[in-house]
Amino acid sequence: MGLTKSEIFTDEQNQLSQLLKAMAHPARIAILQRILISNTCICGDLVEELGLAQATISQHLKELKTAGIIQGTIEGVSVCYCINPVTWKMMEHQLGAFFSSYKGEVKCC
Amino acid sequence: MGLTKSEIFTDEQNQLSQLLKAMAHPARIAILQRILISNTCICGDLVEELGLAQATISQHLKELKTAGIIQGTIEGVSVCYCINPVTWKMMEHQLGAFFSSYKGEVKCC
DNA sequence: TTAATACATTGCAATAATACGATTAATAAA
DNA sequence: TTTATTAATCGTATTATTGCAATGTATTAA
Image (cartoon, rainbow over all chains, first blue to last red; front, side):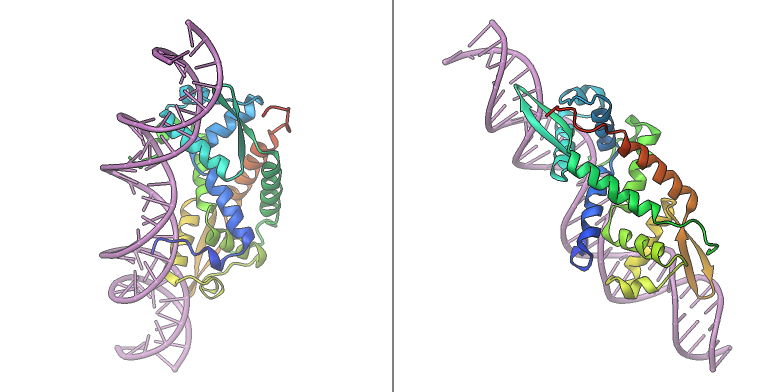
């Protein structure tokens, strides 16, 4: 039916998958990398640097913001975006635990 | 147009976003968690444990397999799935580097 | 006030993803 | 061989995502 049955999963599973989904696009990875490099925030620079239309960039920024991964504040005419430290650290911790819970190949298949 | 312009992004950005996309679904998170817990692989148990149809589970398993996150081998009548250690470690390392590259809030916005 | 700049929103078209019933393929048990 | 079991695949309906032109909104500069 094309509708994810989120009610049958745990809150943790739903939350983590939503965060991952927000990051799971090359443009949004590129945006995050750009924010991470120039620790100071950016805005319309992205439109020039990535080869996408302004409306598209704005849409991607909105998705990252809605997911809580970034935050933005109005700075005169432009808008300044940066990492949301709370979500970032939460995600870092959660993913770290998830990946490190794998105890190597125990000769299985 | 509904078509991601992968040609304007780096291979790293495209690859990482594809791996994240493969994980970005609660059912697939649940499948991975299940595999991580019962270090020994599983198969049709998932159909009982998760509340999804067999065809749907099979589809999710295929996506994880296509992305290279899990691997499966035929074991009699059933199929045994487990983590692909190469991709897993690669992803763990790449995501670890990505998240740890954030140097805290430098009072920005 | 008027014009310019920087983003956000809206609306549209095209493609992708989700879920499942039905069917198929392959192995195991009788 | 026949039957049962397990899982993959196909077809289809529904919903979500992607990308952009056009438009709207708010702030700054003249």
